[in-house]
Length: 125
Image (cartoon, rainbow, N blue to C red; front, side):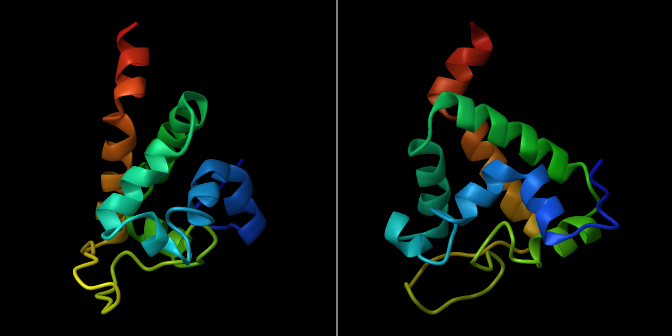
């Protein structure tokens, strides 16, 4: 079982495969290819995957957000899940946007996935 206090890079990838996939695409090194702002890149992560992927991502995000802020920081700062720093104030592209904490970033990602019309339709069915 995954322990946020004692983990390896492989443990993170195994526990959060969908988040790792996002980090290799829309939330990865070339995130600006997926939008003009960080929020657009997050939304593109929702749009470029199917319902099953999005539902699994929501489950992973709930699991990640159940940890303390310190544990979320440690997991995120390994750069296994992301190739960008969503808390950094970057110059390029201009007006990219940033989040004050990693928790705030992951909560925004969760909201984007939960607000996806296909996910909402599935949950109300």
